[in-house]
Image 1: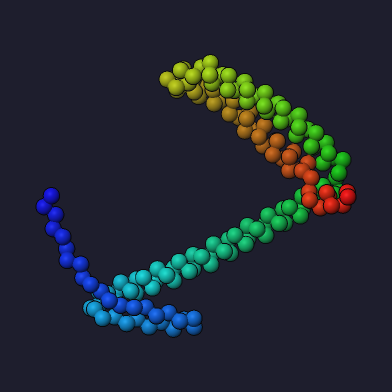
Image 2: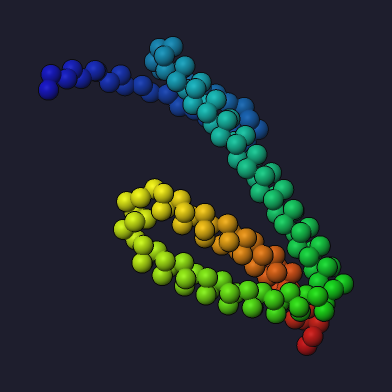
Length: 158
C-alpha cells in the first residue's frame, strides 16, 4: 500500500553495430547507462555464441541420423529375407501389444480405487506391467526399424 515509486531515469543512448563488427556506443547519461549497454552487448555476444553452438549441435545430430539411416538401409539390402521376417514379427507383436494394453487398462479400471489409495497396490501394478510393456515396446521398435520399407527400395521396385 505504501509503496514508494522510484523515479525512472530517462536514458538516451544508441548502439550502432555495423556488419564489420565495429561498434559505437553513444551515451548521453552517466556511467550507469554505459554499464547497462555493456551488459546488453555481452548478452548479445552470448546469445550469438549459443545460436552457433545450437546450429552445430543440430548439424551433428542430423549427420548422425543420416549415417544411422544409411547403415540401416545397407543392412536391409544385405538381409531382405530377414527384414521381411522382422516385418511379420512386428505385426504379430503389435497384436500382442494391443491385447496386453487391453488387459492393462481393464486391470486399471477394476482396481482403480486401490491403485489410487494404496501405494503397495500401485507398486505391485507397476512391477507386474511396467517391465513387460517397456521390453515389448523396445522389441517392437527394433523390429519396426529393421523391417521398415525405405524410400529407395520403393523406387527400385517400380
